[in-house]
Length: 236
Image 1 (cartoon, rainbow, N blue to C red):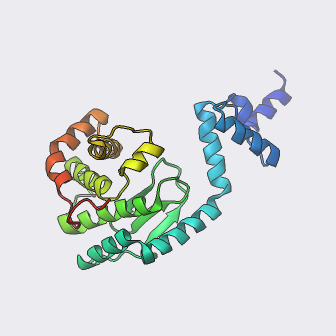
Image 2: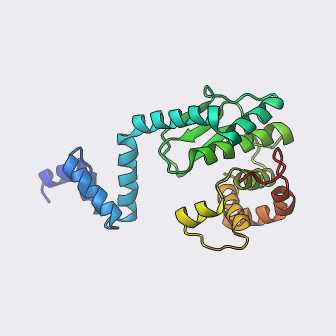
Image 3: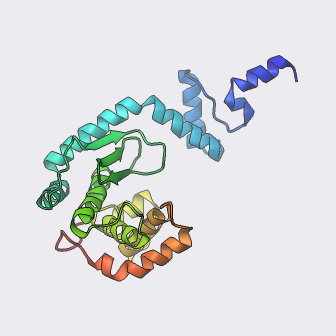
């Protein structure tokens, strides 16, 4: 291989590994990338590169859209307004100043830091209302039950993840049916909550694997799934 060929490959990541994705600013080549993505012609790495390129290109617009939706939900969403008031009753204060939209590199919809507020991932396709409510349930649990976010207590993590998935609306039947290809009718809600809680716990730094996560979720399941506070029952 000549020095010229080596130099060309060094400046063109697509040539170093044939992922099917082309790094480009060309409108035509972006269209080709999209076609390959939609028709399954990219490798797993190529799909990751496609999503990353799309997120980078639309980051400003995505964040603006996320902020507009956040402001609308804080003003008009019954479940968001309800959770906002319940958090306020406990001495907390969530508002658009500490509910912020960001471009996220990880596959998550949002996150909570008790010291700083809620992060919403602007470039993720999840329902913003469900995601915001999910994180508000975490905030409520932190204030009401002193959930341990600092030392990563897995039982605390499992309980608040069960409650957040159950109460936020993210496990409603039609969402599972249309968006996640989960077609079981009986106990669909419970299985969705358990599945999503297990995934979230497995991502904790001090959780060994998904086996340990599932074990912890099962240990606290009965009491945490039955606890619908601050709602009288599962809202959605």
